[in-house]
Length: 356
Image (cartoon, rainbow, N blue to C red):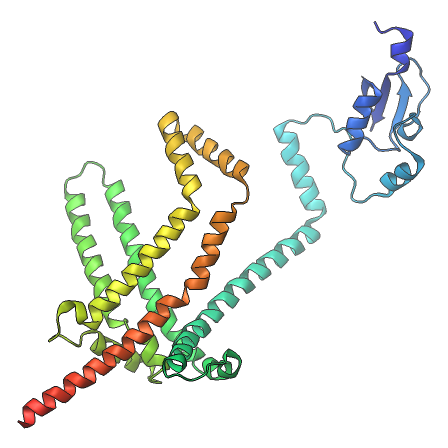
């Protein structure tokens, strides 16, 4: 039993007919800070039956704070009684049903904004592709290149480049899905000996299709923009130029130079990605060596990432990748000019040899 002095310092709080306490003033301050105790809540001393309000408790609320807190919106239900999971779900559905128009409006705004950003990103990509070709050609010729002045000219190529982007990237996407399908086939095959051999055969076909298509579209961007060629003509001329130079050493042919440039860029991006995720990779291998339970491993890695917070180094590497992204397009434009010049010289030499 508390003595009279201690009881005098204890308070009972009543919210929606349910009493909480006794609690001292320090505990009440914590409840107030958490938003669980409002000035208008009923309160009484533990040794008294007379109810007042929490605003009347000495040294808890001042007048200005009590008014501001009472007028605050939205307010959090103070001192909620503990609920079961079923009650939490029921309350969730009740609130959702009551505020369905508002919640639906918020969801619609988020969906429209997300879709708009996706469409804007997709729409901007053909502009980026065409802009790389034109700016590189202008600077390669020694002319001044103002993005503001060239932008109307860049926009003229949007429909053609957009159509080619849908076709080229769509085919690459389907080939990638085909590869994932092979992996799923191997996993689902179990102990069957036929499945791995069939999967390897399909993988060989997939690699052949991927490589062949890569050759055919090696210079599609350049022909579509710099040569003002149509969709079909761009792909046809791209294939012919990529396969030219067969009389040259293999490392001087346009095809292998293109493969080397793309490989260098992919390796560079891979290094940046590994650098950006280095902390996560280290944490993964550390936890993998100390934790055997997969669920516990995933939980530890997730908690570690949350504790790590914002990583300036990872953010800087991602920004660096975006800044340097035009390098790949510029390299292929330069390779295109070089390959065209070599192809013309080769044609001239053949004409001279034929006339001789």
